[in-house]
Length: 368
Image (cartoon, rainbow, N blue to C red; front, side, top):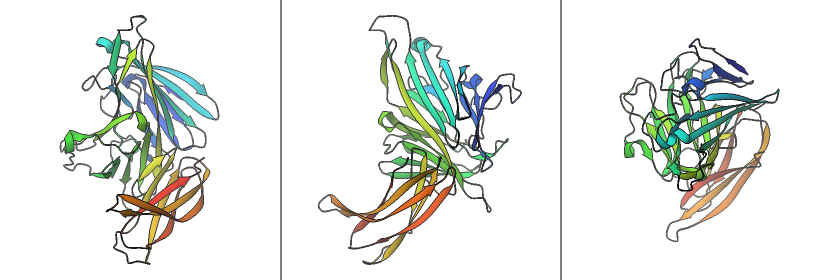
C-alpha cells in the first residue's frame, strides 16, 4: 500500500495493489476510486479520473438522495485510515462528512479491500447520523446514492473503448451501447430504471482487433436497492454515468445504514447475463425455432475472481401460457475448475422435447 502524492496534484492518494488490480483512491475527491488498473488486460476500468481535482470521474462517488448534484460529498476531503496491511490483504477506510443542514451530522464511510489471490475489489459502506443529542425527534431521512463513471480504456489516458452496459430489469436485461464521440442517448424515464430485477450491473468493452472483450461487474445489496440510473445524452461524448440509489432510511442519533458491494473485472465475455459472489457469466445461444428432438447448443462463459470448483446446471423451463405455470427439467450438469481471472467457456446441449416456449436456465452451484 502507498499513501503519497502519486500524480503530482499536491494531495495524497492511496494505492492498493495485488497481482490483478492496482487501485488508486483520491481522499481529496470524496474518497472516490480514481483508477482501477486491471493488470492482466492492461486497461483502466475508470479511465476518466477524477484527475487532478476534476469533479467528474471515478467510482463510488458518494451522494445522498436528498441533495441535488453535486451535493456535499463528491468533492469534500475524506479522512483516510489504513486498517490492515498484511501479505494476505490490504484494507483502508475513507470517511466523509456533509456540510449543509442535517447532512452536517451525516457521515459516509467506505472500506476498500484487496485480498491476495483475488481479482476483485471489496467495498463495505456505512452512512451514520451522529449528533450527540438524545432527542428522539431529531432524525434525518435520506438514502445512500453511488455514482460511477465505469469506462474501460487505455491506462494513463482518458481514452475509452466502445462498450455496452448491461442492466438487469424485470423486463429483461437492458443492453445499452455506448460509442465514443457518438451521439449516444438514453431517455427512457429520464434515465431512471425503477424496476431492477437483480443486484448487479456491469459493462463490457470491445477494444477491437485481436484483443478480447474486457469488462467489469458490480454486485450490490439487492434487498436494499431502490433503482438504477444512467445519465447519457448526445452531449456526453466520452462517458455516461452509471449509478444506483438505495432505499431511503430514517436515522436517529447513532443509527447507521450499511451495505456491501464488489467490483469484479472479467476478460473474454461478449456480454454479461449475471454476476454474484465474484462470479460473472454469460449465457448465449443462437436464436432459432427448433423442431422437437433438435439439440440446441447453449454457450456458457464464467469468469471467477478466485480459484474454486463449481457445478453448472442447465435446465429447460417450458412455459405454459394458458395455465400460467411452467415445468423445469434439468438437462445436464458440468463440474468446472475455475482459476482467478480465467474465463472458462463450455457448450451444453438442450434437446427440445415438446412444442412450446422454452427458456434455458443456468445455475452455478457450490460457488465457494
